[in-house]
Image (cartoon, rainbow, N blue to C red; front, side, top):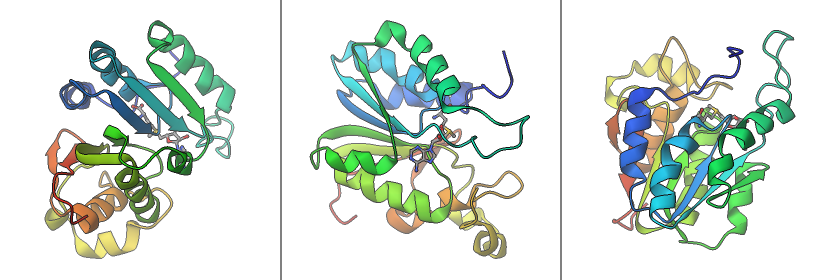
Length: 201
Ligand SMILES: C[S@@+](CC[C@H](N)C(=O)[O-])C[C@H]1O[C@@H](n2cnc3c(N)ncnc32)[C@H](O)[C@@H]1O
């Protein structure tokens, strides 16, 4: 397979998403790419008689140099082929994550965040997830590689709000945004999650 088109989640992340999506009926995903995380969640969502809404503009790689450039249609085509057997369980929305604001407040059981990774964008996407997610639902996301208190604060300051939010293996943008809204989340592999039981967010 062309190595531009590889899943961004690994085996452990896949297992964590399988667990988090068990019994969930109304699920949103921000950032789908070719569908790794979607495929991890879809069997459980289908089993529960639920539905997955995936939102992605598929434009992350359009400004990259030729060797990394990917046309949105190439990503969408791979995604649609891959999820074909779940076609009645998934809706793919091509657009910005803000499209989620067109859905009613509190409708989701689970929201998975894996779109842009700068601090500002993850903070924005968490706000949108809080709009969608019901009390007692779960908000989770990818690229959480260590807790906030274990991060070098100078590097956090320098890199969290760059475009990638990333420096030398540490995803400062994600870690800072999650910490600011939720404090210390639950975490396994690179997945973080919180239950929205408490109403103080
Ligand atoms: C890291 S990839 C998602 C990987 C995927 N979850 C997986 O398991 O392989 C991030 C995706 O988010 C999308 N994205 C980034 N910013 C976005 C935004 N503001 N709105 C919608 N999609 C966005 C990109 O097009 C890209 O496909």
